[in-house]
Image (tube, rainbow, N blue to C red; front, side, top):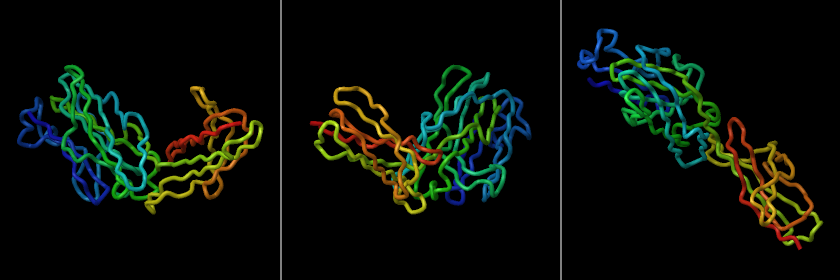
Length: 287
């Protein structure tokens, strides 16, 4: 008995995936019939149209992990390769697991999807946890030249997940969970004068920018709260001194009192569409 998972890219970034038993092999599956011969919830046509969530039998998805639980951060030129892992269980064991990310409002609609990242492999790479459970992984690519083609795609993406048991049972979830795809942010820090007298004013400047997927360049990120942090020489951790707001051009500027030798840096906590960023620290010698 063989159960195949296939993926076909359609219309550029928009793609579909299918889980199906070939008709010639359907008879090998216990309890197979006309309904079993078509396990696919997807209709292979362009533009892509899918069916609703579906469960047949006792196959269950127990966990899905996107990029190791971290945000998918994409700049302006380099591709970001990441893994989606599907853990599933079935009393007869797991044959395959599959996943992809899609952006939009409704995977069932011809017009409800405006972006997708799908694997090129026809099957997930499965590792058996025990006789009934396996974790199957697929590799996806976020490419600013193709799959990430505009700022509107920054933010929450839906995760489609599916699994097939060795007995032909399956489960499909159009949105099992969410993953975050964010525009890469950058920060700089410059503290001066150097050296500075103890108790004198120290000016700390910097700039916050982020990837613009519409222009493939980095641009100013204004009106954002950024933390100014300091680590005294010999200390093991930074402490936050104050919060500074970037101006319309992304510039940061504030003044503090110089008290001890140490390292200054800016830290940006990120937003729903932009990644966290930490600048390279700038050491200041206090005389």
